[in-house]
Every structure is written in structure tokens, then in C-alpha cells.
Image (cartoon, rainbow, N blue to C red):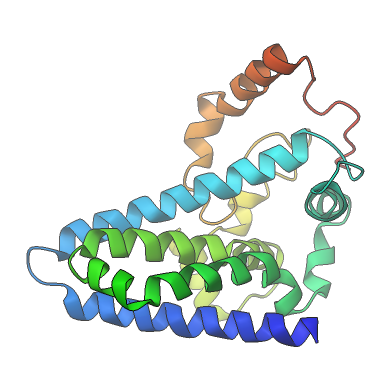
Amino acid sequence: MAHRLVAIALGLALALGVANAGLLLAALGPHTAIPAGLAALCGALVADAVTGLVHWACDTWGDERTRLLGPHLIRSFREHHRDPGAMLRHDWIEVNREPGVAAALALVLLSLPPMRAALAEHAALHAFLLALLAYGASANQLHLWAHAEAPPRPVRILQRCGLILAPEHHARHHRAPRTSAYCISTGWLNPALDALGFWRALERAITRLTGVRARQGATNG
């Protein structure tokens, strides 16, 4: 039953996403197309940042015994390092369950009449939210395709164009010590964040505040 409900939620998310994209495209005009395009780019970047933050946090802090997040979220990331191919053995519903259900709930809110009326007057905001939800909801699937030996041809084209996470780019994260390239939707932010030492600086700041050391007792494989 739970599996079926998740499947319904994922189907709802896809349908509402397509419907919202159609409404956005119909509302675009000469003066709104470029701002909407830039806003969509920002939405994709924010989604990439969120996936990186979650991935980094689950790789760096706590373990499988951590309350609430440990048994499921942290465990999935740690097991992925030990067996990167394990996610390929899960079906589409299992892979996309949590982000897909969250996106479905968000898209239901965006589809309510008051929200639709407000977004009709703000195409850039609509584009930002749709791009954020699209890349965020599909992050696990994009991550899976970066590990697949033979992803669908359209997916490989998008990977080569740099519009979604490419296998060659993501492979950097799986090279020891596995402390870089955390962003897993597009990977656009990884070069800048790694070059700036962003994650190490964030770890040092948290250690100063809490006294807890990064990757203390962690086993990332």
C-alpha cells in the first residue's frame, strides 16, 4: 500500500510539474522570458547547493545510529560509498520516494487558485520555484544515472551538455578521501565550492561551535 501511495504521489508531482511548466510558458512574453530564464538558472543552482549541503552533512556528521536521520538518510549515503552500485538495484519509486513526495506536496500548494493567480503575475518567481523543484525532486534519479553504465540516450546527451550531473564529474566524489564534489543534481557548484575550501571552512566553524570533529567515527567506505 505504501509503495502504491508513493507511486501516486510521484505521478502527481510529474503531472503538476508539467501543468505548471505549461502555464509558465503560456504566460511568458518578450519582457519576461529572459528574467524567467535567469530565475530558472538560479533555481537550478539553489537545488544543486541544497543537494550538496545534505550530501556533505550526511557524509560528515553523525552515523547510522543518529536519532531520526541516521537509520535512513545517513545510512543510505554511507552505504552508497561502500557499494555505489547498490542504488541501481532499487526501482524508480524507491529511488525517488522522499524528494518526489516533497515535490508533490509543494506543487499541490503552487497549483492552488490563490498561488496560481499570484504566480501568473510573477513569471520569474514561478520559473525559479519550478526549476528548484524539478532539480531537487530528481536529484536521486540524476545521481543514479551518473552511476549507470548505459543511461537512456536523452539522459546521456543532457549529461554531455552539462545540464545534469555527468558520470565523469561525479566520479571525483568517489575518489578517496571522498570529501569533495558533494552536489549531485547538476554539479555546477562543485568546482567553485571545492576551490574555495567551502566545506572545510564550514566544518571548522561547526567544530569551533560544538566541539564535534568532522567525520568523527564516520565510515564512508
